[in-house]
Length: 226
Image 1 (cartoon, one colour):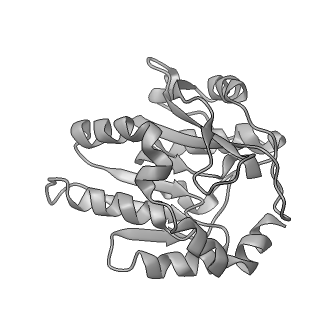
Image 2: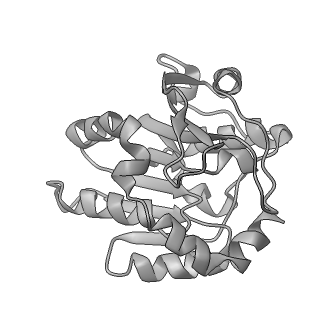
């Protein structure tokens, strides 16, 4: 199983993840993050598949530098299904405003209390692990957690895999189709980019989604089916 691979190789993967920076990996969508910092009166961020917490730590530090009032809720929630990676992540983000939760898509049952709560949701190197049959439910779950003017950022991995992790084909075209089913729309997507870890056959794309303007889902989201 994929989760077992991440637990069995937690220390090795932690070193690998920390060999790159947030800015290196996520440079293509940083303008969206800057916009959220400029416009949102309060910020709450969800990192799904947070791994060692590299991205969660960066985002928490960025949030700590934003001018806020006492009434504003400013936090990062890091979700990681591999509990040994999550344990390392807790150590890496110690002292930062990061809440760790062991949970997984497609439903993220432990996050139900956060409905409509996140200005930014990040799925970095996660979507290829979700089987095609579960992706509509997964995206609907994320739509329920997204604030009305929030952004959902998903990275898509293309290329072969040489270890025991299960990975499924992904595409921007599929994201457009799935998004419409759950009252989201793709507002930005990148061309294929080279892998920051130097794997020559691996490429990445990033898609940014938001709720469809004037959609009934902006007022009352439909219940998750299935």
